[in-house]
Length: 251
Picture 1 (cartoon, rainbow, N blue to C red):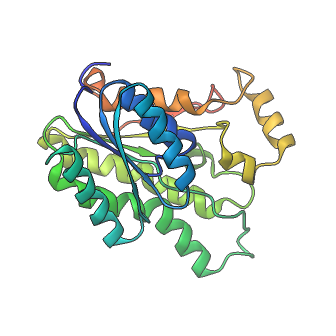
Picture 2: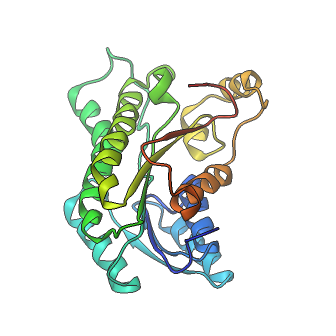
C-alpha cells in the first residue's frame, strides 16, 4: 500500500479485534506500530508476536486513554522507539460498557461512556497533534450507531459515536490547511468480542440476515479500510465517514 513504509503509527486499543487487525495490517504495509492496550496484556503480546513473526516493527504500551499522564507516556514511548514524528493515529479505544435505558442510566454512567468513546479521541489527538507532520492521517472509529441511534440500551454509546463523527469533520476543516487528513470509519455488525459480550446470538443472526451481503463483517475488513485511509492512496479524502456495514445502512 502506497506511503506506509517507515511511517510511525499509534493504534489505541490495538491489542484485540479491530485494533489487533489494524496493528497487524499497518505493520505488514511497512509502518512502525505502537500498540496501545489497557486490560488486554495477553492479547497485546500476541499481537506484537504476530507482527514480529513477519519481520514487522512494533512495541506495546499500556495506558488508559482517558488519563492524561498515560497518554503522554504513550506518545513519549512511541517517539522514543520510532523517532520524532507520528504519521498515523488510529483512535480505536471505545466500548458500550453496558446496555442501559434512560431510566437505568445515571450521570456517572453517561459520563463514563462519553469520556471513553469521545473524550479519549479528543485527549489522544491533542497529545499527538504536535508531532504529526504534513501528509499525516488520523482515523477515528465511529459506528453505525452514530447514524441509527444504536440498539436497545445504547443511547450513551450512540451519542458518543455521533460526537466522534462530528468531531472528525471539524478537525478535517481545521487540519486540512496543514496537510493533515482526518476521517472516521463507521462499522456495522462486525464479528468481535464487542458483540460476543453485548449482543444476543439471535439478534446477530437477525441482523446478518437483514444485511444485503447476508453476513457479519470481519475485523480484518475494517482494518483494510483503515489502512487505506492511512495511506497516500486516499490522499484527497478527508472529513469522510466511511460506512462498512455490508449494505445494512446507506447514507
